Image (cartoon, rainbow, N blue to C red):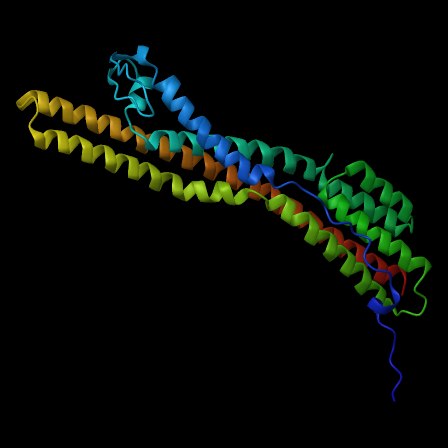
Length: 289
């Protein structure tokens, strides 16, 4: 039976990368809270009885106020889709703040490019401990991946004598890939809400607009008031329906802007992670042949 060389996975310790624990509470709790808050804003702030010339004193889930005194009260007249749109806007704000805090932490301190150059300098001088100290200073996602790779890098320089250089490089590369697989989901988490609202917001607004138009033309068809009064009621109804369109387009535009901002920042982090992995493997292959 032919003798086979030991493989990296057989002779190298299991990965030292630790699984990150993160709470998913915000992912399902925030949308519910935002929708409830949207209704409360619509019902008690925009729908305050003092903002209407003909308020519905009976109250209830959806008071039938009429003749709003101002623009905010006019938004209330847009109908029951308005609180949904307000809730979606609050979701965009909530998840934008959450992603901003998370991605800012993932970027770490200082420039990623400068950090990688410092690590390359220390590795060129065979000073792995100094390179790991740079990771402790940077404290971002790129530094986390680099630190995981450097631990395996240091291990390969002191142990693994029965492995070839290619096997050691593969062991370092595997460590980097596993660390990357744990970092990227944390960066992309909850972006699906922003991307979904970008497309769904306009459709929900269109639904509200169509419902408002149906109510307006229905009132016109009933012939209540006749002549100029009916035309005036139709114009008011159309303007109220268009509040849905304006709110939905504004929400979708805001969600799209924030989504593009965050994906751009994530792309820069991903590029830094790829460069850090390349730096480790190329440095080891050239210095420890």
